Image (tube, rainbow, N blue to C red; front, side, top):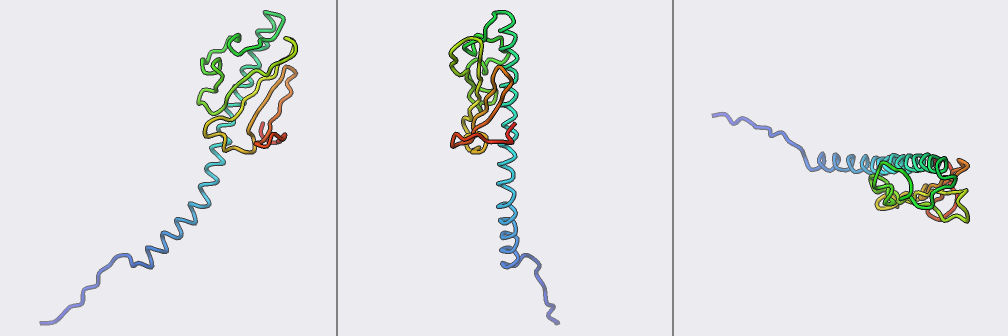
Length: 145
């Protein structure tokens, strides 16, 4: 009888460690890119809400000759906005207190998981169409709109 050598095929420990190391490197690059993308997508929710509220304010002004002082006074189709939140709950909406009813400033401040967005933490829009953003330190930031 002749002994035949049998070769088993499979992964060696070195090959397995190499695959895990490459996977870890790719994940360390991809995850921050992904989270940044998700934050940028969520910002659209704030911008949309501010623009719709601004349009509702202009409609209200046309009928009442003054701007609304509360979100609940506006004819908004989305109940969450009247409650002061965006649809998905990533931003808190508010009308800033004004000294008269001829001006308004609506703000959208990051809430929930969106508070990790340190670049574009708060958006604002006023009756003149002026808009801006502030970062987590309260300093004006560009490139968010």
